[in-house]
Structure formats: structure tokens, C-alpha cells
Length: 526
Image (cartoon, rainbow, N blue to C red):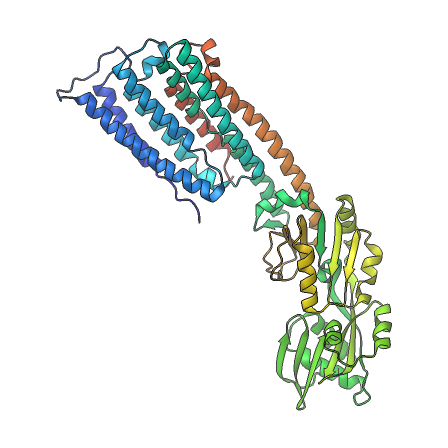
């Protein structure tokens, strides 16, 4: 749920109206006469009371907004201008009762205070859409918090230094300037905008994100679990053989049963089996009561008998009668195996395989360069993994011949560890919580990151390095600029001019100018 936007413009208009009224009826500068005389008893008290109510209302709404921001994003700096506004008004009220000498204190009057509040509200309203559109990573948030405390420390320093050397009204005025001159989040906004540009370029290059923050964890990944079929191997399946292992059925009978069961289900295996049958002049048998067995196979009725096609691991788990020597020979040839079952008896076998992905060596080189431990779990037979294990030096652990439940348990054991990445083209299993999930291909998989092809995986690590470099450089240099403004407001500016850089109204003018610059340059839609 997004934080509701505060209507800063409405409050700025109200503040502007109060500014005009007080500018006409009250002194603009200390020691000066008002432009107009209003014959209303206790007019100044009424003006201060109305302003006090307005300031309290605005501050309460801003504090509510700050609470929502903190709850939603774990970061808010709105309390800093809230304190600044309150100090400004309190100082103006104090000086109205007890005027003090000082050039920069001459602007500490109610009209100038309201004008400054108007500028402050405008600057906050201008950047409100930006702060909602640009997500901040952990480094940016840490930088914003650091600048917040630097602002507070310098404000306290200014209060104590000028309070003890000049007077406490001067100390409050300078502290107010420090609190209002910049927003501690600005460097994070600059870095966030640069991050947005990099991610948008990456999206145009075939890498999209459901969770952009996932890239922050890529450099921490130590273990990778990768799906075999369609990622390490190609999507194309080639049927090697469809054979009978029961003397009651011929090879053509088994092929007819196989095509009859598979024909209604669109899959790469179905298309390959149908092509294999067509080459041999075999047509699908008429099947009914067809049912898909998720992760296992299919079943149905042909000529009033129930048949099913199941994975080899499922057949072993269900203790169907299997010729172990026959299965071993197929595995040694590097084939995947499925069985055609009649009741509890295996009557036929399908052997098929996929060629290795052309990018396998490039992916293996990437994993090796990053020092990753790569694991693979599959329901296919051990034979289907032989070529992958032979060519992938980064593959440290392979578990094959798993049932669907066994594969699920293995994935849970691997992926619920810290700093793990799952690379898949299948639906994410339940109870699996990898640090990052990367989906390969165009399947609608719920993943943090989507890549078009397995070769795009390298872009993740390259982009992570670019983002880290951008965060570091942009945050460093923009923070230096912000600290410079804070130092000027905290007292360094007094060596340049006894007036500028310390008057709160000048601080809000500079803040608005910087906000307009940020608004012009940092545009998430540009």
C-alpha cells in the first residue's frame, strides 16, 4: 500500500495568503513600521495565534506522513523540517517580545517566516512524486540517515555556538537555517535516478524485474541451483525410441498407445513423439478419460484398459516391475526414460533426450569466475545428466532419479539457505525461499528477475557492479555538496557575509532552487 500524498500545494497557498496579509499589516523587518495600520485590538496577537494554529496543523500532518513513510519504506526525514518550522516560529515569537541585535535577525519576522514556510512546502510538494517513483536501496537509505544526523549535529552546534557567543535567538535562527536548507534524501534521489536509468537500459536489453532490489543481493550469492531442462539443455526434445518390453504388445502397439495418451496435451515431448510416430506410419490410438499427472505424466483409457505414461523415478517409487538392466543400458547412452504402464506392470519404454544448450560453456565460465557452487536436481534419469556433468566444471552436486516429492525436498534443503539463487523456467515450488529467483525464457514464472536467455545471466553480475559503482560515486559527491551547504548555514557562511547563509528565509530560497534543479534533472520518465 502506497503512502498517501500530502497536499503540500494547498498548504503552500494558505501560507502564501497569510504571508501577504502579514506583510501588509505587520513589519517586514525588525524595527520597521508596517505598511498598513489595522484598527483591530490585539491584531498582532490574532495574527500570531492564527499562524501558530496553521503551523501546528501542518506539522501534525507532516508527522503523520513521516510515520507512514517510516512504516512503508523504513526511511523518513520529514521530522527535520517539522522541527525547523517549529523553531522558526518560536524564535520569531520570542524576538517579537524581546528584540535582539543582529543583521541576519532582522528578517526573523512573521511575514518572512510565513514566506519561508511557503517556499519549504513548495519544495516538499515538488519532489513528492519523485520520492515515490524512485526506490532507494540499503546504501541510499543509510546515506540519507547519515546526512540526517549530520544535519542535526550541525544544528545543535550552531545553536550552542551562536547562542553562547551572541544570543540564543541568534542560535535558534542559525539552527533553523541548518535544518531547512537541504533535504538529507537528495543524494539518495540522485543515486536512485542513476540506478533507474541503468535498470531501464537493462530492461530494454531483455532483463526485467519484479523486484529491482534483488540486484543488490546478486554479489552476495554463493550457491546457485539451476533447472536442467530448457536451461542447461535445449528446449528441443528428440525421441530416440519407443519400445515394447512386454511380449503381449508390439513396438507399434506401444507407439500407438503413447501417441493416444499424449496427443491432447501440447508439449515438446508430445510434438516429438507424434513426429516419431508419423515417420513410422503409426497413428494415435483413441483415448478417453485423459488426465494430466503434474510432474509425473499422463493417464487415460484405451480399448477399455487403463494406461499411463510416467517418469522413470515415479515408476521406481511406485515399485512397478522394471527391467533394471534395460534401464541401465538406456542411461549409459545418456537418455531420459519414461515408462508406459498397464496397471502395475511396465509394458513399454520411451527414451528421449535434449541437446546441450549452446551457451552451456559460457554459463559455466560465468559461474566459475564468480566462484559459485552450482547444484542441479532433476526427476530425469542419471543418464540424462551425464553430458552436463562432464562439461560443467562449476557443477558441484547433481541429484537425479528424483520423484516430484523428492525433488521438492531437495530444493527446499538447498534453496532455504542464505545467499542462494534459483535459476528456473518452471513454477516456483512451495516452501522454497531462495535469496533471488531468476526466470529464464517467456514462461510466466513468479520470479524476482526475468531474463530472455541463459546468456543474459552475465548481465546481472555486470549490472550489479555498475550499480554499486554508481551508488558509491553519486552518493559521495552529492553528499559532499549537501554537507557544504550545511556548513555554510551552520556558520561558515558568516565569514562570507554576516547576513547570507544564516537567515532561515535564505535557506528556504536555496532549498527551493535545489529542489527545482533536482526536479528538472531527476525525472524517472525521461
